[in-house]
Picture (tube, rainbow, N blue to C red):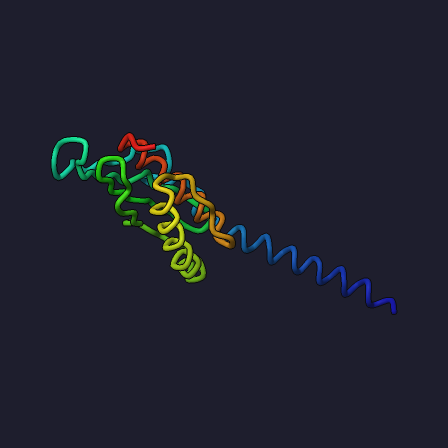
Length: 146
């Protein structure tokens, strides 16, 4: 009976050490990478034709999230969002890649449906969703689209 509290304590300490070790490894991305959020403004691509229906594109700033870095490219025709993509995605591990592979198409669908950055995040991909939103908003701001 006296060993049970000792085992519980040892298990708690081991679990806590595991959590700290996990966060320490993912913190390697915490240092600002070139082009990370706020370092460079969104990049725009000139339109195919002039006028109110011009097709224009912009790439939002690279946003760092808990497990990687991404940026979002938006293409608009006039004020209508016609395409959204992620031209640059760097992740720290295969699990993060799987999460992004599932979340990014859902986020893209939401943007095309909402025609704005007013989208819901994807459950289980909170950090990815937030980075996607921030880069998307920067691209829309560069294009002067609400």
